[in-house]
Length: 254
Image (cartoon, rainbow, N blue to C red; front, side, top):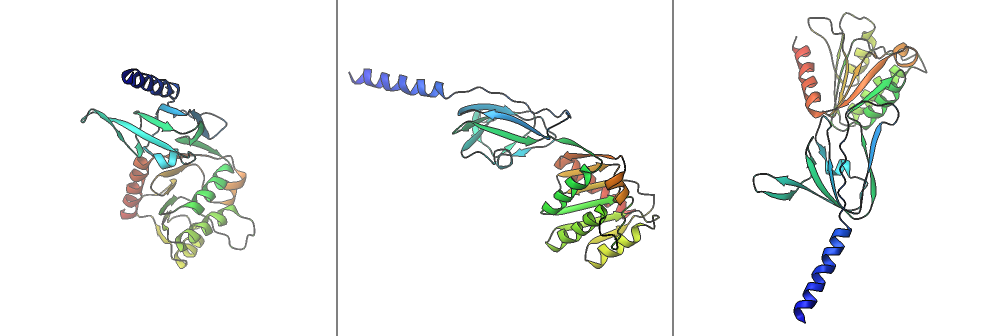
């Protein structure tokens, strides 16, 4: 009798486990698509198999910030067993146990910014920066007498970021006289700003928190940010961001 009871308990547990088991595989696509800037998929109650194919590793707290309860396991090829992890690396599979069904949203690794989209997105990113901002800009026009100038907003946002403890570094093209006003405004407000040394610097690059890159055709002028047809990209990658920070230092050293 005792043996039968144990078998029944075992069967009940097995049925419960199987009923909560969902093999769900979602591979993030790095292909640029129009429309929503987010990729979304569903994690079902129980076990889920997921993977990412972005440029960069992703922390579990970033990806699952809106999940009440989850556990993430990865396969350890050395110990031949699954272990807990808090980092998801590209092109690898991970088991996730969640308490209830939930939709997960994740920003695409590349986004297109057309025309004024650049100004709005970059202003938000500068205002939310926590650690570092690097800017390499061919033309940065500061016009304090203009009550409506999106370039002024970005330049002042750099000063505000510096005042709240973010390490802000800026390189401007030395042969563009339009940059002088911005140079002195930033410098007088404690921002580390430099003119380039040597070759002409025609790049338009912003690197935020050593992870987010904004690069493209936009200069920081009212015409480029508000009136022109311009296009830039946001790329989420620590590896590429660190490469461009090294590039920043190379320009600085001449």
